[in-house]
Image (cartoon, rainbow, N blue to C red):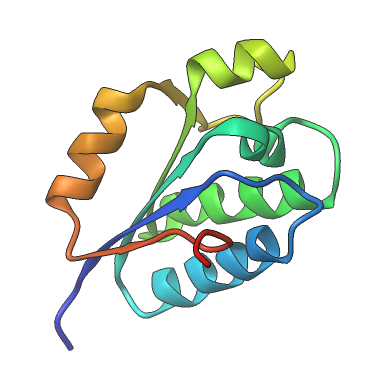
Length: 118
């Protein structure tokens, strides 16, 4: 099997089904040996904020790195400040910016943006 680098761009928070679907997809991709990068912007920065079931799921995915998983979870630092959750992220979440997003998109084999479109 060929390993792929998949970037997932999230812009909607916990109220969206796309966030839950993206977490399940990331879990399956990691289990199959793919590298996954998640870039959370807008209200999606709250998905990895310390409280809640989705934050626990994000933390569990990040802990897979201890067992060979290759997940990077990056939140848009400016959006995290606007939403007041900049200092409340689960361990392993990294603040970033749109330059990071461009790098992730450029370097990915596949880019997914659930919840976006017509």
